[in-house]
Image 1 (cartoon, helix red, strand yellow):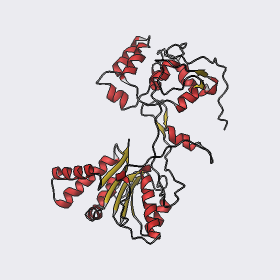
Image 2 (image 1 turned 45 degrees about the horizontal axis):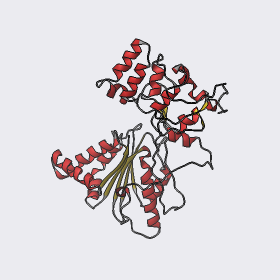
Image 3 (image 1 turned 135 degrees about the vertical axis):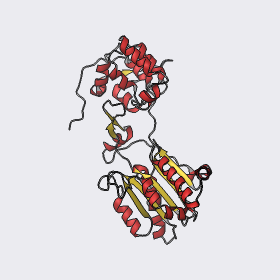
Image 4 (image 1 turned 90 degrees about the vertical axis):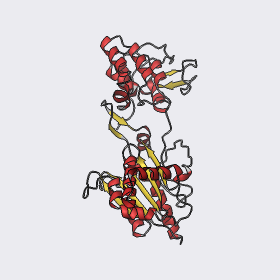
Length: 364
C-alpha cells in the first residue's frame, strides 16, 4: 500500500492565527490528510498563539495536527459560541447556540464527545480560518500505559499491553481512532519513540511481603499491571521464595478473540502461582457475562482470602466495570456479615480511603 500523500499544489502561507484567508470547512475537513506536507507555513508568535504550538519555523499542517493538538476533544461552550458567530446560515447558527445551552450541552455534546472538527463537518456554512481552527484545539496530552512486565524478568526491558482503538465515533460521524494505539500499531521493529516513565502510585504495587495474598480484578487491557504482578510472583516462586495465594478475575469479550496472555496464564496457574477466573461477555457461561459476575460466583473464596489480609486491586474501565466490581464487594460484605448496605458502604469507603487493602487504577 502506498501511504504517501497525493501531491496537491498548495501555497505556503504563514499560519497567522485569525488572519488567514477563509477556507471552505468541508474542504478543510476532507483535506487534512490529503494535504500532507504540501501545506506548510510558519506560526508567528503573538498573544493569540497558544503556547503549545511551534512558532518561528516552517511546519506542515499534518505535523501540527499529528503531534501538537487534540482533534477529538469535546468542544467547549465558548468554542460553540465562536462557531455560531462564524455561521452566516441562520438555522445552523441557532442550532449551534442551542447546543451550547445548559440543558443540551451535557447530553448532546459532552456525552457524544462532539469535537470542533465534527461540528465543522456538520455545519457547512461555518467560515473558519485554519488559524482560528488551530487556536481552538487543546495541546496533545501524553497517553499513559501500565507496564505489563516485572523488573525481575529483565531490568533493561519492559512490555506494554495495548489495544488498538478503532470504533464508530460516539458522535455518529465516522470512525474514532486512538491516537497512541494506532501510532504504535504502525511502527516498525527498531523504530524509536519518545517515552517518559513514572512510578505508579505507591498503593498500586505488590505488597512488600510476597506471602501476602492478592486479589486482582480487571477487564481488557486492565490486565497489564497484573501480568507484571503474576510474572514477579512466578519468578519469586522459582527462586525459592514462598508466595501467597493470588486470584485473578479477568473479563474480556471472547476466548478466541481477546483472552490476553492465555497460554502464559495457564502455565502460571499450573505452577500454582495464581488461580484464574474468566468471564466472556460474548460467550456467557451460566449467566456469568462480566467480571463482576464471576467475582460474585466465587464470593466465598474471595471474602475468605480478604479476611486473611489479602489486598484487592481493580484495574480497567472506570465507567462500568470498576463501579460494578465495587457494588459486588458491597453485596459480598452484606451477604458474608448479614449486614446492612449502609454498614457495607461505610466498610468499603473506609478501605478505599485507607488506600492499602482496596486500590484502583481505572480509566474512562
